[in-house]
Picture 1 (cartoon, rainbow, N blue to C red):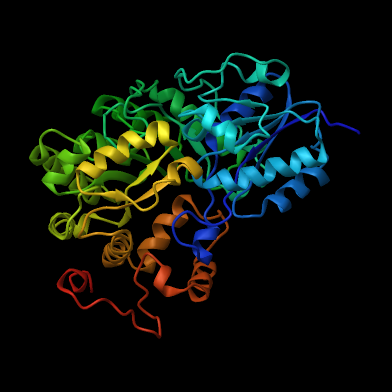
Picture 2 (cartoon, rainbow, N blue to C red):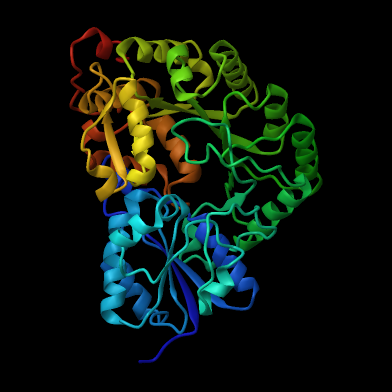
Amino acid sequence: MKRSSTVAFISAGMLSPKKRDHALARRQLYLNYGALSLATKLELAGHDVSLLHGEHRSPEDVFRQLQESGRFPSIYPLMVSIPSFYALPWAQTFCKLAKAFDPYCRIVVGGRWVVGPDPNWFRGLLPEADAVAPGLSESVIEQLLTERPVLSRIAEPTPGFTLNHRLVDGFRKYQPSIEASRGCGMGCVFCEERDIQVEKLGEGAALATSMALVREQYEGEEIRPYLQSSMFLPNARWAAGFADEMHRRGLDISWRTETRVDVMTPQTLKHLARAGLRVIDLGLETASPRQILAMKKACNPSRYLSAASDLLTACRDNGVKAKVNVLLYAGETRETLEETTAWLEGRRDAIAGVSVGPVLAYGPPKTADVLIQEWCRLGARPIDKRAAATSGITAMHLSPDFPAEEAEAASLALTRHFMDQDAYFALKSFSYYPRDYDREDFDRDVSASDPSLLPFSVRDTSTPEVMPSNKFDTAFQD
């Protein structure tokens, strides 16, 4: 059997979108920048490397592409990255295909959120994996090609190199990513990085250099990078210096990032806007004081919400679109959600859109059970007690007020209240839709989708949306 000398990375896709299955959801692209970091390091070491994303294509289709391109089988292991538990079923099928074609191929599987919590549990679900990497692997990636190094979840610093997006099959479809920092460590109960301390930002000049290098990779075309950071935490001085450096280099690049609502000052936001920040994802989660405390989001809800309000005002005043994340949490009631809704409504002119969903327990029993037990004390209960063991995704009935079906309905109602198709397209097309996906494509997909599944209001639909007639739900109607 002829073997190539290419190191092939596969980013596992999904058999169906993780929230609701419709044409728009299947258009979304998520660049696996963790796998690209490993691929880039190997390329810098002299290897022939490629990264193929599964997206929403079938495992069979992706495997066929890998074979027909001559990259598989290879003298090197097949590197499979699983970015979320939703991608696990796809990866299971793909790895079975690879082993059936070449029983001697070595498969190395990574994806720290999926593999790391309990590697033994993971091996039981994916026995085709010859090695599993439970954490960040830049320090061992070269060894993994020929050896069997000891693998652990030890945190690793942000790499000092710029991701090479040209290693990605069809890279021009994807908006690029630039990793700014790693870690968070703020202790929120639901967050997988709650105990991983945030890393200090590097020099703004280095980040500007990466911006310039990525633009060169795209041959000067317009790019809208996502500055990847679980909690982007610059101070005003850093932000001002970064803005000055971007202007000195003539880098007129619009970009996006995410952070908490209570860690960035309005002055910092102003400087970042001058540096090109145009969209920011803000983890508000809730505006209910009771739920803020339950999540361990903050010890002082009033101070937390005041900081959030100031930051939203700064976004509005500086031309930055704020997308606010809301989490329906364990113990949620109609009263607590109405508190959040009223708070958002009072700042509607500063909010470009919202993303809403009920909390889920991710992980195998070893880690998920601790969360589930705490949530049960708040009045929640799992829909399926076996889910953690079988899939790593446990959905919850949040409270007597919010069984799972009602929580899903409330999530859709709230997003539709704050977003129409114009707002949704503006936010999604900035980062997540293919770079050549335009408004005509979007409108065509809207027409082809079931409107009951869409997370925004569609003004021109011929079938008016039917809402439940209780007080809570009618409060969300425009």
